[in-house]
Length: 443
View 1 (cartoon, rainbow, N blue to C red):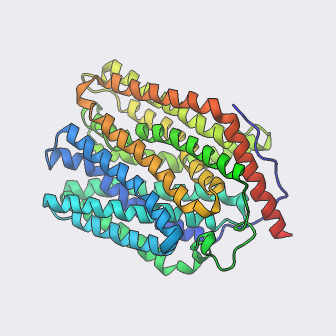
View 2: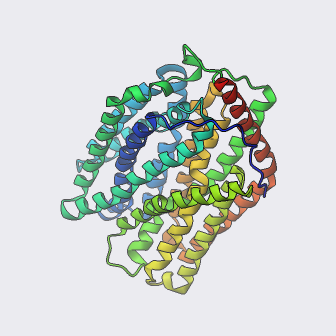
View 3: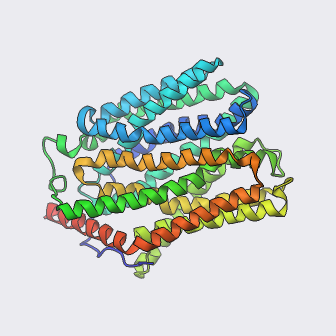
């Protein structure tokens, strides 16, 4: 695995822009609304709507897949028509409407609400991530840190949501929990609108800016564009496998928590474990990378993603063992599930925020919004496959189910190793170009 990182440019000290806090809290409340709904979605379809596991898998996978597929079009619309701010506001309104519809019992409103959420997420999700990257045009050395901080906001919202959803659905009913998700979306829109001035610098795409910075005007050769797009496509392919495994969190791992774990807790509460670990492990892992960097041992970005896939293999190997030791036919200690969440959380930190930052670094400026959308499309394909594969949960031993996920993740790890040197070269070249232009801007 390639360990060499990009050469260090002269240190340019910048503070994070105030827009980071605005986007942090906007995304925190948007993710609260998203996971508030998602944490009870499979349980609601199983226990209230009485859908079969196969049908739940099709709907769950289809919904998550479309939620992540529509950002491709949302990013494209923002690049060419709407601009990032309008896309985010329209998306937020659509999602708030979707959660409001879910708060009513009739089945038609259930599906209408999901359609509004899919459309709204497509407009909202890629463009808030792109605005964040745009705020760091003149300080690329801070971009990775910014995305790690932003990712903690995502998981703070994800941590609160299952706790709120569980309390409301157990004390007041399913639809109060869905209604709480709508309130979270309103909070997100309010924060983004009230503090708009702090993110205005990142609201326009490079092609639309009336006063582009030197970094915006950076010209890439055909070869550079081709290499960057190839690198992103390879990362997207790995991301598909990762999310196929990871998104079992809201589906089969929730059923495992309910049916195969020795606990009296509501099963949706286990979905708070992953974001809790994100908040705990992210500062520790960033500190670990910093220590390695000071000794010139830090893995490259591509190597970190490969490490994430190897940890995914380990996580589902633990669940395979849990199944064979009793979880196939009965209940086992809760420690198996908690341990799996701990491992796959570290995998997520190695992979997901690094992937977001890579899109911001590598995407040619003229297609940055679209390629940020493509990142979510890859996530969507993986999520759809998670639901599709999860439909086999009742048809095979749980240990066999988990061992397949571990094996597929291992294949993705080896595939990444085959191209990791080329990926690393492209990433380093992009980082050097950004740092060089940033230094010229400061001069």
